[in-house]
Length: 400
Image (cartoon, rainbow, N blue to C red):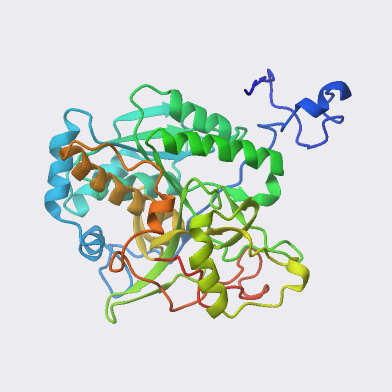
């Protein structure tokens, strides 16, 4: 069993138990010290703003997404009907007390001829003084693709652990079964013991019937500051979440390619699950990869991510009354979360439960469900866009 002791205030960062004033006699009984480090963010990349919103060869509309995803509009109408009895619930997760604009959300839904669907419930405390483009992107995308399905907004601060976030989701009465989260950091912010505890909680969340989707990141194959080792995203590389990458779609050519900043690769702290063995082996046999002496640059035995991808470039956003196209896996994640909600609707109507833990299922889907994105490449963009080598020439195969 696990005993959680909460400090009355946030303590200074550090992994040395002695430094934290913890008696040496109990060091061997501690797995990790949590909630001592601010969680960095996945910020969407702003592109050149255009007013009014233009339906060009690059910029996507909600109607484009509905058509390209093959959404039956009846599914959205069904979401509207089922929402009345609270069956259909989904949620976004925000950090740093990020707030969305209710007026922007309403205007966005009107602009794309979608039903008015305000956020039904707010859990946590927002910073109401300044809107967040990230929060606006999340709520505008997920609500506009799911009719009147109830959408909740879970808002947390920065000094919080993923264990506490997951605990909140599992103990909130009537909480949704689908979550979209566009926040995260790199594995360098975590110890192995910390990740082990978080993985345990994500596993429990999935077993409770929850589908948790998270943006894979916007820095390509994220590299260390010295460009000599791969620094994977987490929890984007968790084995118990659906990790979402980004693609770029050209309306004129109908070609979908890898968005160059979409993160992906192999975890150094999470072991590769068995269901990934075959696709990873296939990928490694075909991909052009850089030199990896003694496996010190990147691991090929860790969990591969992302699992799936959606549109990650030229997504519509209205923030603070200003329209602008943005790019990022932050937009792709709520798109796919909306798809899971629509699938759950079909399951509810057949007397079935929610999809729940979905990661392994994605690797068992038959041919014809989705497709491999083999055009384009990603770059390590956590520093200068081209300063580090392009690690995954053809993109991790599961950008499907």
